[in-house]
Amino acid sequence: MLMATVMCFSMLSTTAGAANRPTTMAPNGIVTTPHYLASAAALEVLEEGGNAVDAAIAAQATLAVVYPQYTSMGGDAFWLIYNADKDELKALNASGRSGEKTTIDFYKDKGYNKIPSRGYLAANTVPGTISGWGEAYEYAEETMDLSMEWDELLERAIHYAEKGYPVTPNQERWTKTAMNPDNKELFDLGRFKTFTDIFVKPNGELYKTGDVLVQKDLAKTLKRIAMNGADEFYKGQTAKKIAADIQANGGSLTFEDFANHKADWVNPISVDYRGYQAYNVPPNSQGMASLSILNILNNFDLKSMGEGSADYYHVMVEATKQAFADRDKWLTDPDFAKIPVDELLSKEHGKKLAARIDMNKAAENVKPLDPKGDTVWLGIVDKDGNAVSVIQSHYFDWGAGVVAKDTGVLLQNRGSFFSLDPNHVNDLEPKKRTFHTLNPAMLFKDGKPFMLYGTQGGEGQPQTQAALVTRFVDFGMTVQDAIEAPRWLHGRNWGETANGLRMEGRIPQSVMDEMIRRGHPVKKIDDYTDQVGQSGMVVIDPATNVKFAGADPRGEGAAVGY
Image 1 (cartoon, rainbow, N blue to C red):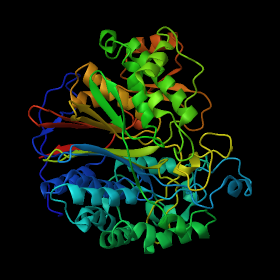
Image 2: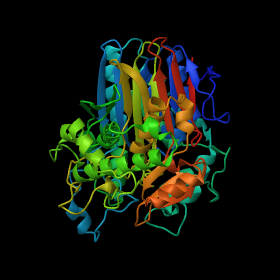
Image 3: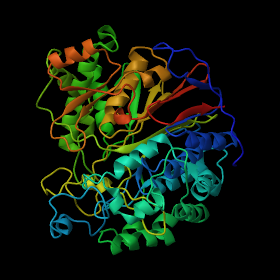
Image 4: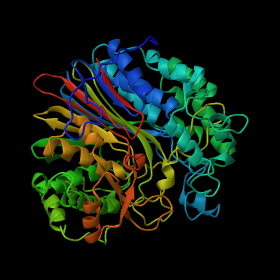
């Protein structure tokens, strides 16, 4: 399966500017991921006869090797899977729970009032990603045609781990950032030997763009998973190695925590948006916030405002504030609290939130959380119409910053988001899933998948998802133009105490000035920056079955098809 893959690119004209990439078109299968090697791996699976789930696993495994600053096998994932033969949409929650011994007192007794952001104490939830691969594969094998053999799906990932892959400019930049010794809470990953042993050269130099990085231990772990299935990660030698290393370094997770983990099939949640049905995954994901923004926007005539106008950006930011206020009040593990999702996503509630928006003044009393998170989203449609929208992450860039000994598995720090305040909605308790920023999305038309979309970017995910939908549905942009159009991010960056509004530099200064006049704390950022995430989209033409896909120039991905 390591043969060269033929990629089909379209020459579709653009509407937003000749400098934009062309939208990719394909009559059979199509893929978009944030790294070109992962896109190639997924496309090869489709061409070999695999289904959309098979291709998604191949892409995720490859990303876990070649995009370690954004994701790893030590992270979490959420899936939306459309089964064309059964005509059903399923959601899969592959996020991990805290350990049985992971309590508030565990941290308080060590003198902490906040869970550390890095290190073994930050790695307090079981990685759920591999359980998602296993559950999704079993479902597809039973219900979809032409499933490929499990071990075949990991071949590309094993190859890149064992033989190496070229480091990208993005990885070079994020390695430099991670090594910054001035902020030990968020960076200074050079203090962790397991990190530097793999992601820094033996002579102490950092890998530069084009250097080949090899991960021998990760290759061995992938081979065990290829041979033994997903259970290897939770009940096999790999689980024992990871748990032993965490215990040896003062962490809380045990082998029993791994052995007791499982991913869960859950019911998707949805709202109507201008006659389309938008779907996402339920709590503990923030998918309800992404849908709430669309539910609020239903009450505004965006088209008359004009795309890129001050009115457009203002209402998008203000709708986000309202949706985040609900999210921050309610979002946690639904096994530990009753969350009124149906009420929060009702048309009536959307109208009430919309009525609170003043078009002439920015609201000041809504306080979003920090927009942390480094993530990968990918979308895949196969020749039979099966569709996958999946998102995978280990939270911060480089996760917890520690690699489990002898496994090559970079551990996540998602559980650092738990609160040590027992009265907080997202308080730490044993066997609990934390508030999760990850959320994949689909838009249906006449009961069938029409648009798959998602993005990297923590709190930016709901905002960018709303940008993609409105620019495609309300303003008729092409797929690629909707992705490349200027974006924004409302919230806080690491270490900041006040909310800000970052707007890409391509937005006209006159628009920024008007936003400032309305009370928005605008900060101009680079023209194309991954501060606003790396997004992707797939659209399926219901008349011709031609698939259209785009990848974000803010990342290193590719949209490919055949």
